[in-house]
Each structure stands twice: as C-alpha cells, then as structure tokens.
Length: 525
Ligand SMILES: Cc1ncc(Cn2c(C)c(CCOP(=O)(O)OP(=O)(O)O)sc2=O)c(N)n1
Ligand SMILES: [Ca+2]
Image 1 (tube, rainbow, N blue to C red):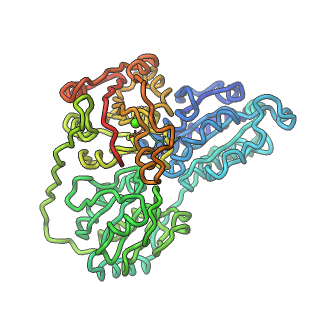
Image 2: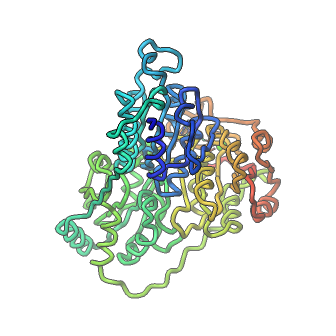
Image 3: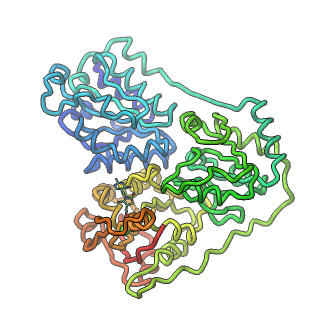
C-alpha cells in the first residue's frame, strides 16, 4: 500500500473529503488517485482558497482541508490565515515540497524552511523526516488543528506519496483524539455566588459562542440574568439576537470607549472572547472604577494575555449550561425586539446611504440568511439596521485581514445550500479575494454579493481623521466597475440604479451567483 493511499484513507475516515486548493507540480502526486468521495474546490489564488475553506469550516463546524503550493502558495495564504487564526478555525493546511534530495540544493519550488515559514500563525507546523512518517504527521496536523482550534500546516516532499507504507504506518487509520473540559464544581459555585451578589452585572459575548452553536443557550442565560448584553469588540460571529431588548450593541474596539460603555456595571462576565480584541488606539482606564471582570474561555493563550480581570479556562458552553441550572428563573418577560431606526438619508441623491442598503436586505432576505460581511466603514450602519435572530448568521474577518469576505461567502454557500448566503463586500475589500467569483460561477452557487461602491477605503479615511493624518495618500479607489469584473469571472453583474431598483433586485431569489453593485455614500465607522 502506498503512503498516499494510507493518507487518503485517513482523511476519508476523518471526513476531510473536500479539498480547497490551488495546485502546483509538487501537489499533483498527492492529488492523484483520489477516492470517489473526495471533491476538489479549485480557487485561483491561495488567499481565496484559505478564506473559502475558512467559511466552509465555520459553516460546517468541522475542520477543513487545504492543499497549497510550496513557498509561493503558502506565502500567498498568510493574509487569509490571520483571519482563521482569530476565528479559531481548525484548518488543516497541506503543501507540496520539492523531492527530498533536491530541497537542500534549493531546486525550483523548494520550500526552504517550510515549517518555519508559517509560524507564528499556525498552531503546529512540520515536515516529516521520512516518508514513513507522513500519515502519522498528517494525523497529528488534523488533531492539532481540532484540539488547538487553530490552523495547522504540513509540508510533504512529493516523492513521499508513492513510497511504500508499512504496517506501523497504517496503524494511524484507527486513531482518534477527543477532549472534554468541564469546570470544577468549586469554580462554578464561586461564579454563581459572584453573579448573585452583583448589583448590575453585564454580559460580553464573543464569536466563539456562535462557532460553538450556543446562540440560543446564551440568549436564555442573558434573559435569566436580565443583564445588559454586549457583543465583544471586533466581533467575527454574532452570538446573540441584535434586536433583542437586552442587546446594547457591539462594544467599540477602543480601551477608553469600552470602559465608558461598561460604566455602572459592578461585574462584567466575558464569555467566549479575548479581553479584548482592541483595534483603534484610544487610551484610558481598562474598566470603570470598582468594576470586576471575569472571563470564561477555552483559549488559554487569550486568558493568559488579558490585561485585567480573572479568567476561567474551560468550555464556555459547559459554564453557560451550568449557570442556566443554577440561576433562578426570572418572572416571564415579554421579548419585545427593538425596532430599527429610520434609515439615514445620503447627502446627495446619486448614491444610497449604507443604512438604506442594509434596511433593504433586512426587508427582502429570508430570516435564516447567512451574511458574510467585509465592508469596513459601515459597521455602525449595519447594526442599526439589520435584524439577525439565528445562530451562524454573521461572519466577519476575525483578524480584520481583508480578502475573507467574498471567498468565505463562497465557502459558506458550498457548506450548506439550505440557507441563503449574502456577501456584503466593500469595493476595496472585494479586490483581495475577487477570484472567488470564478469558483462561485464554476459551482453555480446561489450566492448574492452586494458590492458597496463608495470609491474609497472608507475605514482608512476614518482612521486618517482619528490619527490626524488627513493628507495621507492611498485612501481613494475611484473608477472600478464590479459588474463587468463579475461578468469576466462568469458571474451576473447588475448595477442598482436607485433604492427601489435595489429592493426589487434583492427581492428576487437567485439560484446562481450574482453581484449587485450599489453606489453608496462614504460613511465613518
Ligand atoms: C489584507 C489587508 N490589506 C489592507 C488592509 C487595510 N484596510 C483597508 C485597505 C481598508 C479599506 C477597505 O475598504 P472597503 O471599500 O472594503 O470598505 P470601506 O470603504 O467601507 O471601508 S480597512 C483596513 O484595515 C487590511 N485590513 N487587510
Ligand atoms: Ca469602499
């Protein structure tokens, strides 16, 4: 039996039969003789490949397999990989390497120090010392990704795949690794006592809770506590209904504004989030005077690096379920969802305000739509208008690395055809993952891309104001027409001419990929 055969069989048993990739000659010996259950999703750039896999893994809730080309391909993947690191997506990255005898003399396509290239982004990286160790190393890459909830990377010299496997090599086929982490009863008792003693506790909820499928339990916990509930700053998934009467918004990503937002709360319970994913530097007090913070996360590194508070490293889901058991039921309260504000109007009549676009999506798209959003200056408008009441409804680039949105929308659509998928993509962001349109066309995916064309890197213009650098160059991007770019990749492109036309376009269901371009006013974060 060949090493390749053992590797394919191990991947099949682990359910890793969808390969997101862009191949070079080094990868062909791995991709040969794939069993029938496998499918290969070709992306035209490694950034798009990784972000498609990221969206797919987040939507399926399982690891996803990626196959990249040596150094050039792996290097192209790094930007997209930063998002997968912070959304804690268990991607298994494999990459082809030159034949063993040619690596040292740096023949073409040698990845000279393959494992080193991908650190510190990946949680684990290796290149097996012998062909016989390839299947075990592949298994380790899979288990490391799952256990660390962080991408892993394995580089394999391409002459290894056709080496003969021995009985020990094949032993890996029966392996599996599980982990369970439950809080200690004393830790729980202490947390319950703190919550019951708190005068005015607040909840801060992180994207990990939605990744873990805890949307409904967390909503029940907030109602049980009757607590003001916030989304964690730089939120990459929505773990709570954003129009729920207890929802106070997504915390701003600045030190001082977070402390201001939490004013009046004597205890802040952070679930499934780092403390905190700050962004713009707005120095100030970390917390209001007298406020205590408790963080519950299974991300030990996030717990270790927090600048304040106490952390409990355990499964947040286990804590949520335990608190639901321990805290008394409140009197029945009507759950009156909040009504969106009237959408803001643009300053000129040849563009729409982003709030008008988002209100149109809210009013026309099915309630179970999944949104993949990468439009960096319109977040305030987004949360003022959208109404999301289900889990796995919102995906955002977790490290802020652009190029996630368009490919991830394709990956989410590939994962689950039961829920409609809409990408809300800025005209700047679109360019970093634009090739994913081609993959969407090839797979005839029913995904809608709303292309927000404001002719600027709007978020950077906001930062330029904040940083006092209004004269910085490189923040305007005029003259692009994504309807023709989309057509060039095989996707129908339509220009929305006004609000009524946009609403009519969005109200039409689609069974093929389409891009709807809308001219919008450049707004501030
Ligand atoms: C890979 C990459 N390159 C550059 C940036 C820097 N950047 C850039 C270039 C932004 C502007 C995005 O423009 P957009 O058109 O997508 O959205 P807005 O106009 O709404 O800001 S926001 C931001 O952080 C980034 N985050 N990631
Ligand atoms: Ca823009």
